[in-house]
Each structure stands twice: as structure tokens, then as C-alpha cells.
Image: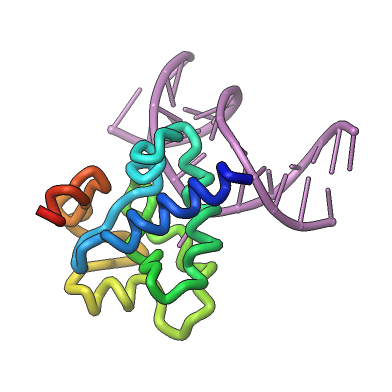
Length: 113
DNA sequence: CGCCTGACGTTGC
DNA sequence: AGCAACGCCAGGC
């Protein structure tokens, strides 16, 4: 219950704080939530959050930098397409320079700084 | 009420 | 280094 709102709320905030041209992973968000072992829950939460325009879920990918959730995107624009608009090089559903474009949720404070 | 699935990650082999 | 199995937690059937 509260856990759901807490998880959802935190994921929501983190994803919204993801800077453009940057991508993060479910595990990184989960780790920030304190549920590092529940990376799946992040995807689940995002599934609920992606329905909101303020939630750029397309910037969240798996540990391999692969756009695993693009099949869940009902929009005409696919994740790779949107990421491409963000100057993020994506090829075959895989983010190029993923290690370079990787953004950690812990950097939120730094971004605000 | 119990089992399976799911936008993942880590550890073991 | 690559592949397989297990673990998480909640939702759906």
C-alpha cells in the first residue's frame, strides 16, 4: 500500500529528474529506493508511471542498456526514436555509449546543485 | 487462497 | 567470458 506509493513516488521523482540525453537503469533506481534486489518492481512502477507525460520512461533501460520496455510503448514513437531525439545514439534497441550516457539517480542532488 | 508472470539484477558454474 | 538458475515484490488469474 504505502510501499506502492512510496516506490511509485520515488521512481516517479527520479525519472522526472533524469536530465535529457541521459539514461538510467532499473537497478540504479531500485538501489536508490533501497530495493536494489527488486529491480523488477522499478519496471512495474514505471509501467504505472509511464502513463504520465512527466515520466520519460524511455530514458530508463536495463543493465545492458537494452530497451526492453519498448514493446510496452503504445505511442507511435518508439523508445529508440525518442532517445534519438535526445541525441542518444540507439541501435537495435541498444543504447550506444551507454556507459557514457548512464546517469545515476544519486546525481539528482548534483543536478540541483 | 495459491501459482505464474513480469520493463531486472546478481551470483554460481 | 558466456550461460543458467535464483531471488525480489507485487499484480493478475
